[in-house]
Amino acid sequence: MKSVLATALAASAALPALLAAPAAAQDAPRKCGTADLMNPLFYQPVEQLPDSRIRFRLCAPEATEPRVVSADIEAIPSGYDGKPAGLVMTRDQLGYWVATTAVPVAAGTYSYGFRIGGLTMADPQAEQFSVSYRGTSSVLEVAGLGGAFQRYDPAIPHGAVSTIDYSSASLGVVRRAHVYTPPGYEKGGTRRYPVLYLVHGAGDSDDSWTSRGRAHYILDNLIASGKAVPMIVVMPAGHTVFKPGSDLFANKDFADDLVKDLIPLIDGRYRTQADPAHRAMAGLSMGGAHTLSWGLPNPGVFGPIGIFSMGFYLPGQEERFIAANDANLRARARAGAPVVFAMGKTDFLYPAVAPTRAIMDRYAIRYRYIESEGGHTWVNWRDYLREFAGSIFKR
Image (tube, rainbow, N blue to C red):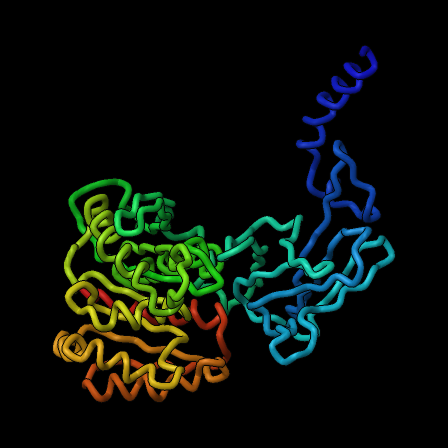
């Protein structure tokens, strides 16, 4: 008993010294596998090289053939071409698994993880994480001038991001949303703000537009530079409880919750300008489908509309959409609110551009079309948000 007590006291005495140890001492090179409870292993898991290639490092002594995987970094094989996904990792002289991208990675924010034995896991040494639809990924930031618009700037005022839970009477469940309020909002006052409802994609969650999309920093920077009007941004959960036969991309449960539950809650709890001219909707991929299905043909609820990396891509899809929304699309054309439709040239949904534009042209809906380089990635979606947020709610 005395030896156990002595060991515990020694451990507790060592803990403050460990926590206070300088970073340089903690990060001193040690062999992989030398960690224990009181002497954890600190190492740099991600390193940006001088030429902006990225080196990844993992300590997993019993792993076999681990790979670095990422849905965002184009320099890392995606697996969509039939070849194995990810970067192969090899052991270095200290026993760490290491892999380096063959080409530089552009400035920006990216998710990544490690695939070991068929399981994809987050980096245990990462400092930032993003909650996806199922699971969690690590997040890294590549420095560079091109990413300044989506990076935290200590020299400007910043807004706040809150997580709210609410009871959805439409669905009979508790739902969650993230809410960005602009700089100065929390000081109070009588000023009311326009609202953007910003929806994530099928692989993401309501956490994703901030953890991966950096929406809050993008808005902070736009507002500080006078390129966007201060606004509230509501990021709802795009998924609902799965039901047999439900449509992931034309999800009426999502629409009912959004219009009947979330919007009234936001207008009641926050200082909003509660009218269509000051209420926008935008989304990427699945969120773009939600916006196309429930935002574009609903000018009585939403004014400005942003559709990112989505469109009509299935046979007969546009005919069904027209049949269900003819009168509402005519009303949308009369409303004249800003509409932005954006797609990457190498996006696998690029064939949806022509039929989607044809419908808006048919109804004389005025819109701005943005065609960018790249594909179905956050690199594009952050750019699209910057363009959209800067074009709505003009003074």
